[in-house]
Length: 172
Image 1 (cartoon, rainbow, N blue to C red):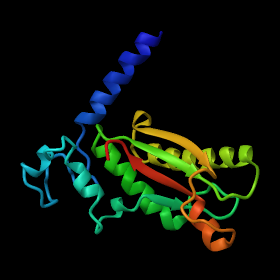
Image 2: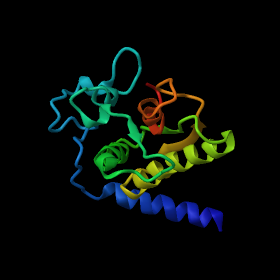
Image 3: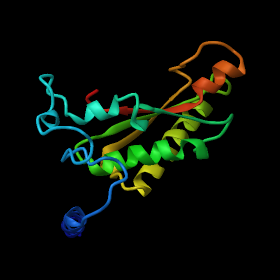
């Protein structure tokens, strides 16, 4: 049964890959329309894939890597929807790319509660990305709870910076 499901999945993915789509993010694999030459797409001497150039361009939405949340929430706010969708389209169009989503919380609440909330935050971004075309195998979601604060302090200005999911591309 497992082999049959695997074969069916491979056939389905092959069929989907052969269909023509209109990506909302520049087609980075061909260089069409994005101002990159063929040599730019071959990568650099560091061996890193060339799509990292697009991910680090400060003029690209893809250079933004954090989704912030309200207190005690894991709902992706509308202001971060386009950010998450852009990363999902990028993953869809670059099947070799993969991300780690790190869910973070402020330091209020117990360690266990914060680990669970951080996981729900990372999973909410992951689910949105999968529904928008990224593959499950490209995305790992983990919780760091309160262990990796971006801002130190005990006030709303610090707490608001710590309630987030960070999008980290493997290989960067």
